[in-house]
Image (cartoon, rainbow, N blue to C red; front, side):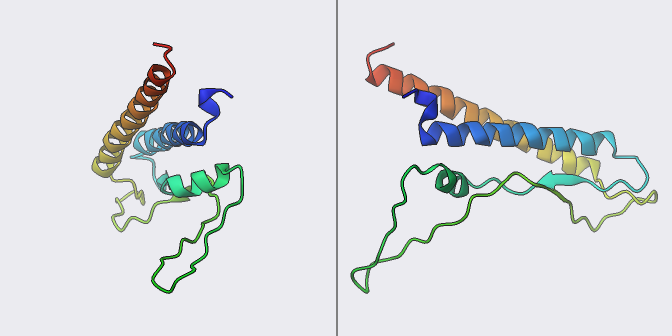
Length: 134
């Protein structure tokens, strides 16, 4: 089995793809910031738990055998899905894109993407070291 086939690495790969897709949508919003009537779009928030539930190979359920135990409930797998932004600020052209907000989202998305890629590469390096393949 390849290291990249492990569920954690598949989830990190999906997270990076989500950030790439979001970056495209945010760039589109910035490019159309002065287009009359344009409505900005964004992706629904990424959820690792949804992705991990989608990647599970076996179906394991939990049950509370004692009233003091806590229970864990699973959630269905989600897709990226673009959605329209709910902005209360509308420009005179009828545009709902606030350029400053979009640029803050772009910067935040870039930092999150870099964090995911760093985590991915360091995890692979750690596994390779553990296997003695430095």
